Length: 181
Image (cartoon, rainbow, N blue to C red; front, side):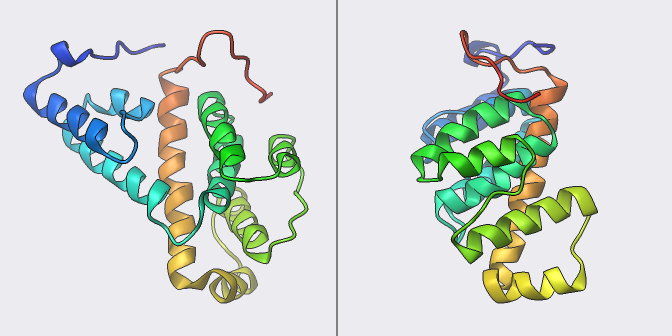
């Protein structure tokens, strides 16, 4: 870890307010990158709120949102992000074969057209820096405009999370080994 994370006793009043708000949220605890973001308390507050919306309040159930998050974690080879969200994807009902394919940079086989579209959009955003007109048109049909906006939000927010975790070299919990090469 490159950054000393503050304990609540070391935080300024502004930092502590943001920290306590995260504990009172649906998460019940501060997300790990927020502990780094507390160096900019206002950014931490807004980023954590955005993360909660994207994690809990999109039109997608967890197993679909986690597709975009795992594609993002894999794109950035974010070891901690992958570790955390693989577990959440499994808990949300994602098939292990889909997770393994994303990990191995193979296109998963999806039985659900919405899941496939989320994957295709996330891959195109990261690798192609946008969407072709054909993919855009199909994404709006399958996901709706709101759904497309939310997939973009998931990819963007979890890019910031991945960059934070990678830059400050967040360690995996003791005894855990990264699956990403």
